Image (cartoon, rainbow, N blue to C red):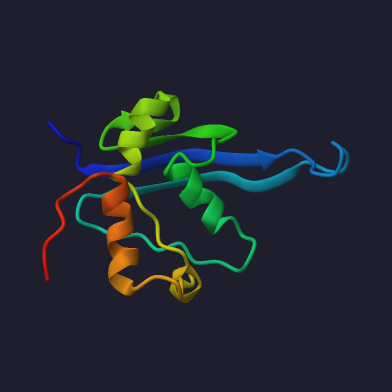
Length: 129
């Protein structure tokens, strides 16, 4: 039986190692973030540039491995999934960048942009127009 919570994030933390030859301070990008999203609800993360919104989205989608914490999607702990299971998860989880205009490509039509993810995931069939 499915849980009432679609997404449960507890104690999510991400630290990045120093970039310049292993020197410099550890970057604490996200520290101890927790939230829940019930089925049928939407959550918007708001914060200034550099506050960790994108890193949180990437960790929830398992595009970046968390340093600590847990992410449960539809009752399944996603931080322990195999690569194959993560690929299946990617077909169900998506986050939207704060600036949608930066995500648009002048080399593609809107239709191509919208269907690109479906084509990659082999979801649906192409209609004729």
